[in-house]
Length: 131
Image (cartoon, rainbow, N blue to C red):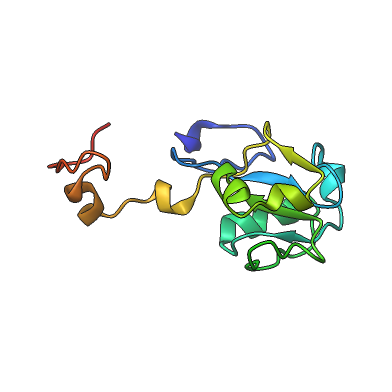
């Protein structure tokens, strides 16, 4: 799928379905690449996250954040449930919902054992992943 992009200077990133990560602006909104320039952003520290945030101009991402401890951060990469569940919105100025960064890794890479176990909500078992 990504091999056929064929646009010089464009690097494709494969994305699977899952809870999408978005930008929570602690000190300012994140709407354009200029908004990331020099920003201190908390994110998980996988290769895709670091590469994307650095490409947007942010400083090297900061790992981990204590619940409700956004001091010293300009932004936070999170999915909606994490923002609301930790009441991060109380200390933020904006939540950019039309900028999808990447899916939550727990949703994007189910293990074969997880597939066999089936959906949590139904308790049914799956014999193989469904398309």
